[in-house]
Image (cartoon, rainbow, N blue to C red; front, side, top):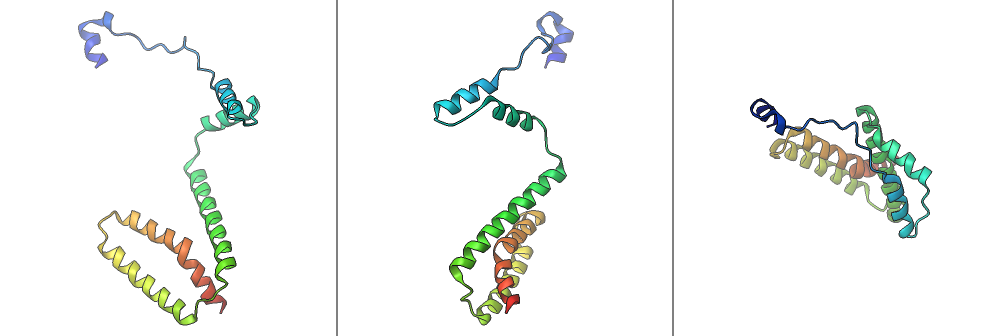
Length: 141
């Protein structure tokens, strides 16, 4: 809208000169909020976090971070299930589970209305987080 007004009435369009403005001091505000909540917060820690937040991650770094987080969740779930379940599922049930999952996967891929990439990602996530646990049990037998 400014380019149109600049041609009609140049005095009403304010130039965008941000050089005179200072950044608001967020670090002292964060530190005081943390201390008011009873947390041990130092300005150095907060400054480090603020600086880290200014740097944007690359696609590779984001993918690596996502993969690492997924692996941690899978390991956590696997260790919890190993402690609780103890591998009491029979081989016949494991075979049936794998068969039914492959059948379900094929039907979902064929008929789900969402984008193929979304469906594939969801299926892979379920595979990584759930089905792999049972496949490992089956392979260990």
